[in-house]
Length: 166
Image (cartoon, rainbow, N blue to C red; front, side, top):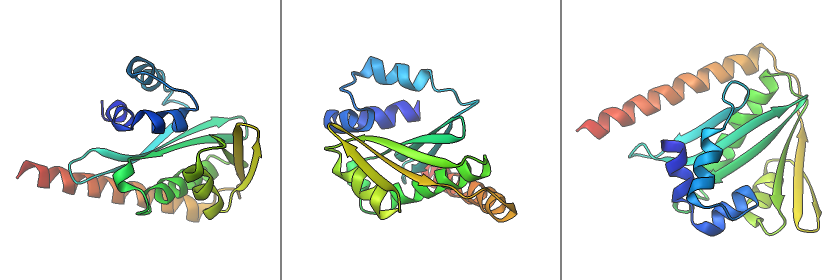
């Protein structure tokens, strides 16, 4: 529900940039329905009204992981993309993955900027770009931090849920 609503709240040009294709509502619904949450991880940032304002989808593939990110326009430039990006990197490290990569259209300047800002090495070839980063193995500290991040996220969501009731 909320994930599909997030993607459908993106304007068509943002859907195109996020997925590399112009998807209609049915295709977006299919994407969400067929996410393999046994294998993949989805991280989100909720707004004050419990709407997903930012989403990261981490898809492990062998020893690497592909990452897709979207942030609603009204919430860009506030650190949402960087926060979910860093959360996904921590999770990938704890899965002992050795690298993380992002595919993006060359015209997706927001993703290119975010990737470079966060230390990914970017390569553009024609209409496509890719940015990647090598990951250090997870350790007790990264596992602890991930657990703590989960606790803080749950507390934040619970607090926002209580505010919504009143």
